[in-house]
Length: 149
Image 1: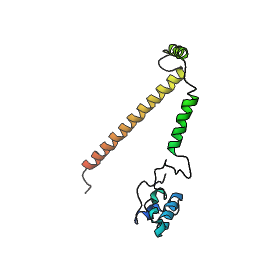
Image 2: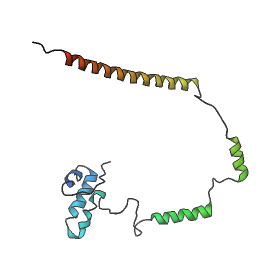
Image 3: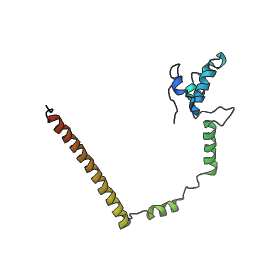
Image 4: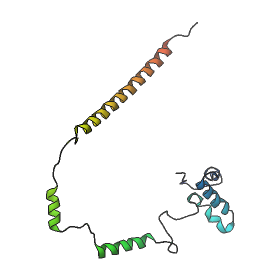
């Protein structure tokens, strides 16, 4: 993603403040603006593009807070209820309708595909083991031969 999770310093700003990427330009802008005494704190949070809070935290002045959202959800649950809740009769009917359906593949085509995929996976695994064994044998064969005079 290009997101830097660690704070930027004088050395790492050159790496993370890459002007060829959008995120790099944001980091570089925070770093450069932080040279001014009034914006000095931007440097501490340059890796978060100048935002020092948690990513889900919002300002009451500009957005809805998580606490407000939670409060509204609680009100909705208490007033509107859950439309998916059932009475006892409906719940019993659903419970009694649950039951064993089947084991295995639904069609012979599904079984054929699964068994073919498993056989191919086993063959690839064995081919890899054979290739490693051949490579190991070649290495020992060449190491044991004397140098030509």
